[in-house]
Image 1 (cartoon, rainbow, N blue to C red):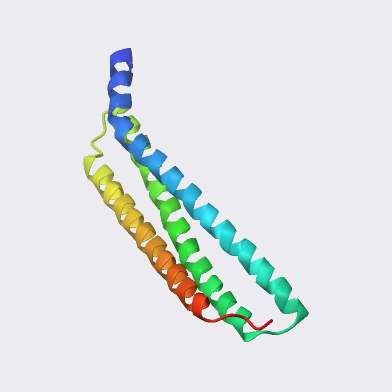
Image 2 (cartoon, rainbow, N blue to C red):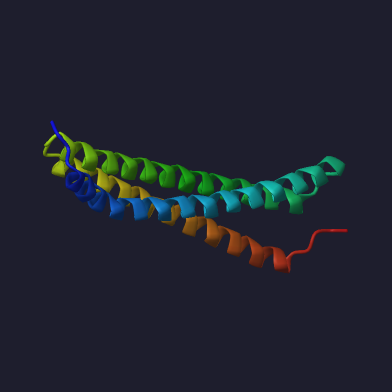
Length: 146
């Protein structure tokens, strides 16, 4: 088994598209973790205020923040799974070419799984955004007691 430089170049060309997809997934993970961080920060502020005294307004907002946290966590999990599947695709591209294996069907299956995870990630992100926007509109009309 003697691998030529031209073969490696061909393998790298095949892996470029999945690598770009992986870059996009990494960027998506940064966006999701930033959103999660902001939700956690707001949750801590409200929990500190609740330590001072019970307030229905803060409890309602905390419930919304907990739901948003779950949605973002699902989105992060699906995005991470998508990245994992893309990494497997890249590895299969290299192994298939180096070892002369026919992995086309496996690559296609993992690509479909990656896309399904990406669709799920975007779906949960969109649900979280809608929940945040709805909560914001509701909070604008209801002010906490002073």
